[in-house]
Image (cartoon, rainbow, N blue to C red; front, side, top):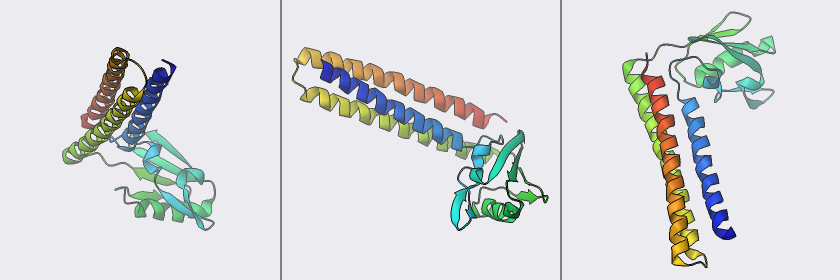
Length: 183
């Protein structure tokens, strides 16, 4: 029994990892609102090594359409501006000598649909991860030295757990889809 409980806990942990990965993916899909995380993938050359912008500057969002990047060293302004342009995020940074201001352009209807598709794909990948955890758990349960009845009961428990996590994925997706498609 202890072995079977361990199998269920391992499956639950794998499913939770799929959910947390999905949540990270969803944060990276922008919904038209300015968010400092939008610049998380941008790296700037800092003393010879590529460094995330967040480690050389403060990134703020004063309103829903603007990001400001305030470098800790003034001589980094040009390098940060260039890194944002090279990252090809569709942003046009403006350097005012003190900080970099980025106006986030409103999303077009076509772009919103593309982002909704990206969110759908990310949620499908999470479901695949959850189902893989279910399959692995069911395989481990079948290998255990317990009666068929006990194995069937644990397989039912695994399926209920799977269903619960699939619903959670659907909730995360529909919330993100509403966020993306709301103008």
